[in-house]
Length: 112
Image (cartoon, rainbow, N blue to C red; front, side):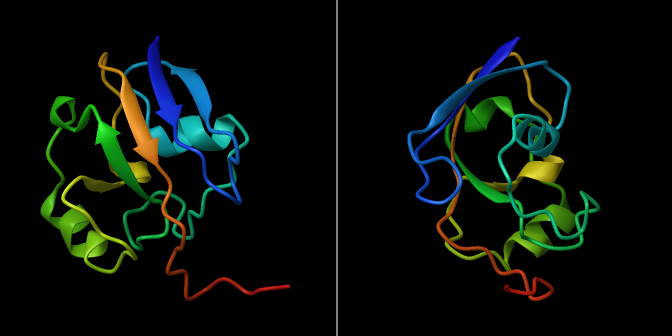
């Protein structure tokens, strides 16, 4: 199992969290399975940027982003050099530390 550490996020994970994730799985699935209600408007089809995460540690262990992912990332709020879409990140054997951005640009979401 690979340890994925989520840094504190005011709305989704106020105290932070550590998860044990099976290598080879998608980061978005691991986060959702752990009960973290991350945005994922396109259900993992790489058609939006709502599952944007920032990889704070372990970025070099990941496969490079595809051109399609890079195009979608350009739409993300708070883009950094280590930004990725969680639906495109395959967890490796290397531990990851991720930050969930404060905002998401989800034009389809309807607020209550």
